[in-house]
Amino acid sequence: MSLPAETVFQVIGAGRVGLALVSMGPAHLLRRGEPVLAQAGPIAVCARNDDLEDVLRLVPADRRGDLCFVQNGLLGPWFAERGLQDATRALLYFAVPSRGAAVEDGGGTVVTGPWAEALVTRLGRGGVAAQVVSAARFEAEAVEKLLWSCVFGLLAEVYKAPVGQLIVERRGEISTLTDELLDVAAEAGLPRPQGDVVGRLVAYSARIPSYQGGLKELPWRNGWFLARRVTPLHGALMAQTTAAR
Image (tube, rainbow, N blue to C red):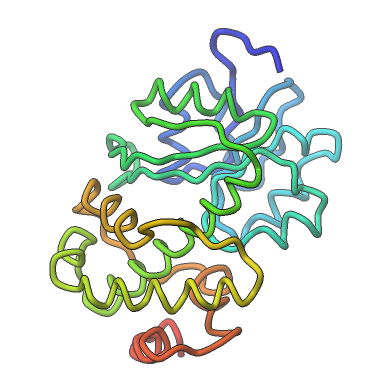
């Protein structure tokens, strides 16, 4: 795809990530319920997973190939059911402490799909190192990011601590939780990340130590694992949280 020097993005969603993407280059910000503009170009979807269906209804069928998704969670089946398996997708390894705050790059951001180059270029202008990867590699990376979201989100919910504190005080639980969830993911047929997965999750957390996670979007994250198999530590910690009740 031939790209202009600065690709103009439409950005759906005025949360922390959406505003961060808008700040990185020319863009049109679309708030909840606003239809996409007629102009050609990529459309970054920075909405919560539970809002994706509503967003999709506002996008004409002939523009859905321009959508760029940046969500976490197990979304592969959702994309496949809607014919979006070839859409641009990104795994964002950065933190934005609050709306309008500076981006804290954690390294490791990957993007796949037709608008991947444009999104990587934009992220680079915003100080976020990113690379274009194949669809197959992206799927494996997506499992790893899902593990990070589930492991650190749950531990942060239980212990009320930022990720930098968790990697010092809860390293054993991080390892056990990661191993448990890796096994469940593999049983479900998801690709298994290779090498030192725990080491990479800890290293990412060390680069954004002040990030305070929590349990979010349960059907797409921890709830998906629980529905398949209750493992000892994951089940015990989830039982302690009000979000699981």
